[in-house]
Image (tube, rainbow, N blue to C red):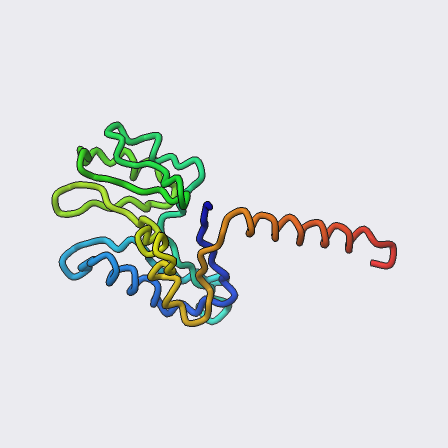
Length: 171
């Protein structure tokens, strides 16, 4: 069963609870210089801040064909066959930053030893039937972990309904 994270920007209020939960779950100390795995951003759609703001919570997207995996010369990154998450074992990491340069979402970070670290989707939690920390704490349900196949089927069904609706003569 493969999973994916989705963010409903209509529900996100930019509280950053997801980022704080991720830092807590992964013992990330921002004050000591660690870069968080999940970050929240404010996006403005007009020249004035009051025009319209939306929020974005971003971490590793666990890409299906992850460029970070292909670029790692040490083989530190791989796909978890059970969840589809892009996971890592940085034992052999040489700190070359190839994965970071290949990642379009800037997900890989580096610890004090110069070895790559990143979001693993809270793999241990998910394997035990629990939600990832970031999803668990989202107060409005904006961030979700969904089964990829179910989500894709839902999108196909909604697209077919929209096509059928717009094809009607009385539309």
